Image (cartoon, rainbow, N blue to C red; front, top):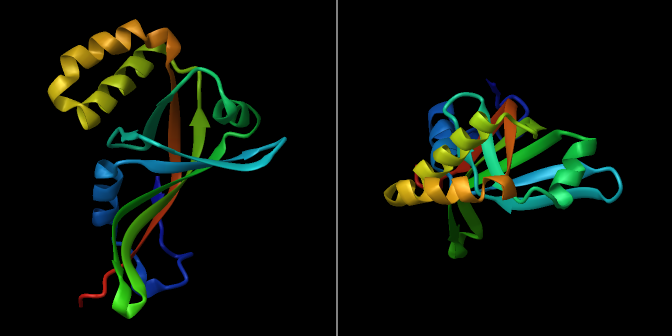
Length: 162
């Protein structure tokens, strides 16, 4: 997992790695973008969880357009946007975002899939984890887990307060 901002045109807007890691850990959702051989580019907003290392986990139904796209081409982009603030009178927006280049993998072992669901519960439903795990076990066969292996990533921000 290589963090590099060398391709960012506005080097004055580079997001340092530590705040980028925080955004990766705490972001509410990301936008998964992929190439669909038959229909072009397809993007979808989706909840995620980072494993603290080099993988992001997504959950979804076991069929659908997203999965059909990934069967043909598993190279994807995942974008997470953090805080934003429109400053109307200055005609600008403060923001922070990260973009990750990844490979997507399906058909994961059952243990990895259940661990991913536990990570998701830790992030989004920590006070209801026990009942969430029971729910996950009951719906396990109706749930697909996608692992995004992060290859490269970068971050950008704009803060008008200096």
